[in-house]
Length: 303
Length: 335
Ligand SMILES: Cc1ncc(C[n+]2csc(CCOP(=O)(O)OP(=O)(O)O)c2C)c(N)n1
Ligand SMILES: [Mg+2]
Image 1 (cartoon, helix red, strand yellow):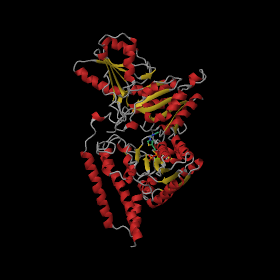
Image 2: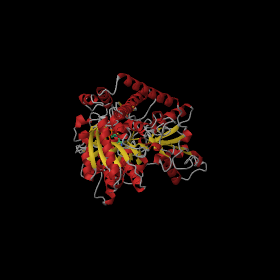
Image 3: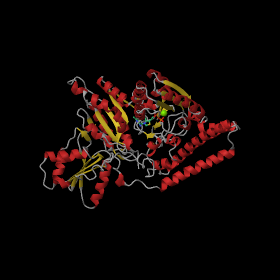
Image 4: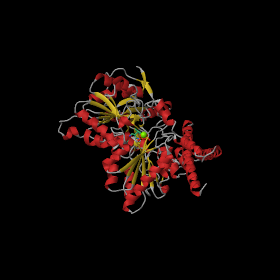
């Protein structure tokens, strides 16, 4: 298994997609000459030319909308929105066009579009540049939402998203780009759409995703040293949200902790714990055994 | 010297001093970033000083000013104390927003300075609304809004120009055309690169000016501001300038030819204005050195105060989320 950075893994995924399918092209702000705000597409302009690596103006609503149009008409666009904060300018296109067109036209249209964006709080970038809004997308029927947290996922989820005939949002975490890990060489047996148990344990079930995964792994290391073995589950795909492995795990451990970078109210953690209660009769002590760890309910401060 | 020429000389020296304050502040900010005292995004205004300085003097204390994320120069020129700006950039509780906003979000509502927006183009509709309120309240204030060439590609630029013209609002749109939106050059993001000419599509008066020449900027801004005041209608002024540093501290700056940077560097606004004042006999070495010393002392004091200041306590994090709200959720059930 080659060792790659998350950033290189994303780039490899892009390169493979561009090389194997002529319908694929990448567009977004500064993806070409600049090489991408997070350097994910560095070198690709030289390799694939300006028709397939397209720099766009600062026009998020329009170039995401154009991606939808191109997808409808037979292309396989990969639209890069620099960060999830700026995707807010394209929310209308994503929610009102990409997510609805299939259903509203009674199946006449498909929107095989991939939208990639960096999510999460970087290093002290203040409120307008630190959002973790992936659950907003996960709220919308008609969309699929992937959150790669490992190098292998960063590389292989893109191909899975492109192979899917629906609009897929890929949220890459800004603080993961520089992390390194072993990358699977083939997609054999790779399933982008299901949670994975990252570490086996029996003391409690910790559910997380995206940029929180390395933090949870580090916390689990500490617990391991004191003899407590948590089971770590990486959700990976927020929509469709598959919770079976989580439920199976919680039935063994009897304790659930959801760790999420988003806000608490109506967030991923709330969803995880609410669904758990909904589906299973709970032991009387259950309420004290469920826990959410989310971000403070305030805009992220710079300090 | 007659009285009139004496005041003109004073005025020129004030412009120079203001530009120098911004220049040295920015250089210091870059150092503080290197030393880890300033973190996060840091967008320097080096090379563009003449635009903020030349325009700000044409506005009154009652006028409103809106800026984008490259806002240190505007904040300084508007009169925010250097120490509160530096403290804000250090993320300290003594900053103008208690350290919550940082470099990109400098606000001082008392000085009618409305930041500090980090979403490109988002400041434009805000300015339209401020001017709308002034119009509805029969105030004589105008609103000046600064934005980059990159923002011209956003829908908000076109929508805001149209709204301001349609509703006849006193907005001075100030485009700081520094030729680049991050790494993308103007001619790669605009089909028609003459930005001020776009105003015609909305029936708005417009002009372009050499943004490296503080006197030219001032003359053009005065005319533009007077036009807004006299007619109550918007005006689009395009200042052609250049940022001499990278887009932000994260930017490796690989997309600009060295000769291009050098040719703009040769026209940089602070040194070129100082040279001009020397040639006109209005500035001598003694004066220049005194100016440098004063500015250096002001910058050093700002850094020292910011370094010594505390950060806002974490317990205050949910303070000011809503007006008079109890801290939301803090007391809610922990589950
Ligand atoms: C809506 C939005 N999209 C993308 C970004 C990322 N970004 C920040 S600054 C910038 C370039 C803006 O260029 P310009 O408006 O010319 O201002 P300048 O930096 O040159 O002063 C970009 C792409 C952003 N902040 N907001
Ligand atoms: Mg620019």
